Image (cartoon, rainbow, N blue to C red; front, side, top):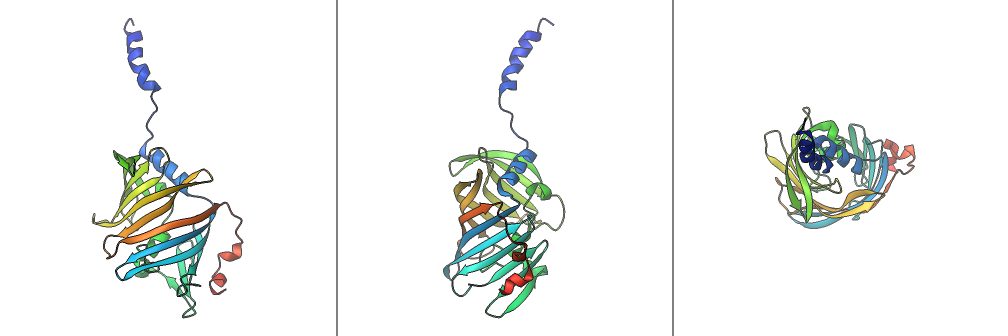
Length: 245
């Protein structure tokens, strides 16, 4: 008993230090930062392809995590192209052909508007904690920001990326860098955030580059022009009739 006070003095400083969150708690905070019941987004894709550079502008409406509607605003050749996602189904409409196409099967791996993003990327469950088991594997500094390095392993078959390595900002609980892998272990895509912005208390990527490493070119920049959360969006927006309006 006489040693108890000394032991307590040795333990007490450790008890007073801030406790590191677990990998699961970090991923939960990342999800809370990015996911909302509804949002309206205006964005721009700058595609640095093999044959040159082009810019695509779009406005998207999203609700209930599973539904979204996107209309392309520019350039003129893409203006009026629309995409509708309802749960696990995705349609595109092209005014040039006046046709609506259901995107499924191997078509999900195709590029969206010639970018480094695929339709499959758009179909993913936005909740990382639903899809992956996580573990902390290190700590690094990315773009001047201290970050945890986490490895995420898919909980089940059929997920677009079997493994992810993510760098999470330790203060903002925001993914600043990401490597995406196939089940074979082959690196498929890389994401790097160049600029962040804070909107309604959430940290979001203002500018990020997506690079399909299997594709020529220097990647696709995604630029967030504006975003509004918890918008009251009419249900009629999320209907196949909206594709032809």
